[in-house]
Length: 298
Image 1 (tube, one colour):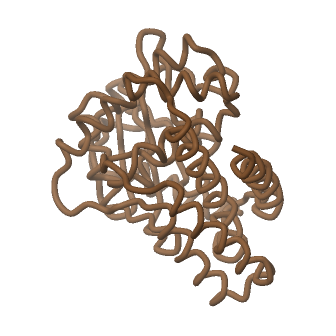
Image 2 (cartoon, helix red, strand yellow):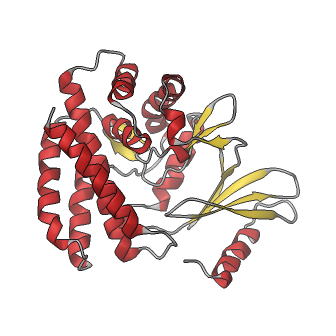
């Protein structure tokens, strides 16, 4: 939890960045559980979002990669322009609009607006990416989280063998992949609607991996039903959603929820942000169990 003096120190750091034109007005933005974010307006009247956050190696979050992905996403036209970076700081242009909620994406109309954006991400962001890039393979993440939980003497140690055993079977069920550059954190709150178009923000977990993870991650984060899931798959792949594809997708949905569960378990040990990680672990573990039961019955 940030204390008053800690928050004032962060505000002073934001005010001291060398890109402002005159005095700035700033307001902390709610949300964000790996960053502290501010909306800033300088003397020119322009608006910006300042994201403050150091590397989080235990979660595979590396800020050089986030900055490079943000720049590539801006070049691809799917994310706001990056105007400044320094270690632990990323500044992008502010987009006037609203963040989506889960209910927004539980409609064919909104999915049909979002799917072309996701296709553009997978097609164009990797092509625009400069420099060294990370990969994102959820099953590697799960194995590494297991090691972190053992090293941290997690209260969940007794459950790890069973959970990681399931992960191994899910990886086999996903099978071979076609590699794309993915966002890998498709929370509805990371999608902005400015009234004319959609934007995708927050590239903390971006990296090369499977398109199925982004599709499954979106489905689990928004609570899509099977009808909407099949529409999502058929619109993305421009082909019927075969039973084999749907089973691979269902396996990746389980992986997405298991990764979120272990992410929260690790955060219980390592994060100092003001967030109920223990409650989040319980919530996601229950969602994973339901998804895994459904997968086993396919």
